[in-house]
Length: 288
Image 1 (cartoon, rainbow, N blue to C red):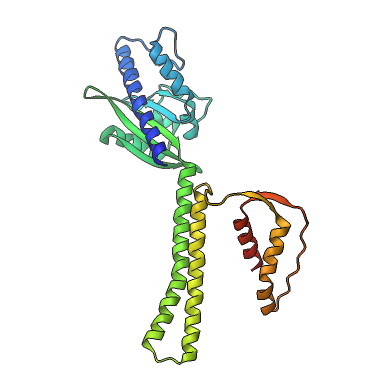
Image 2: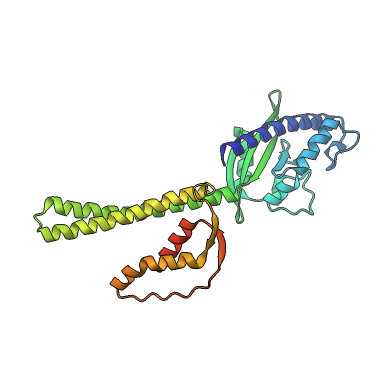
């Protein structure tokens, strides 16, 4: 997530921690007096108006929020939390141990860690989704009175990061291949007595490998620009038939040299909205 997302998450955590501290303090006090109705799922008219507003926020935000007491019982939970942890929306998890909601071993370990070691933050895989968990202990004076859990769907960000890592690994391998060839041929030219004819052959192979590297680097730059909402690629209304004809025309000399026949069959007046440079390059790659 970017800086703005992290800042928003931090604000939500701070605000909700303050709210949960207030709720927990009142709930523990009411338990001592035998008043259990404070744990009802819906705000009551007799409750503090400030808490009613906070409950409204709790049930209407997209992030998942869970409040646990010192015994790992769920004091409060909203629907996004149930959905993210793949629980049942027909089951009332209030006053139940967290294990009734999730038996994910990693999540249960994080809960235990939050009780003993303090703040915990980690992304956990749940089925095909990835959920970012922030667990924060809540204290009254120095006494631990519960845990606040913030859950955020991190699937898109996690998959994007995974794709970037795979792309980096693949590109590193693709760049290494022509670079190894360049170094190898350069070493031969420097260390061996080669004829002029052989030198030209090695120089041609070095140039070919360098051209491959240039194409890869240009593709990386273009992909980077596309990742930034394609700000460097303005779009206009294009004529597909015209672009295809130009691309085919540019490849005719090379096709004749390789004794390859190029046949063109494209409908006229096919208009679409795109970037001309990218479309031309895509069609040229298909032809070549």
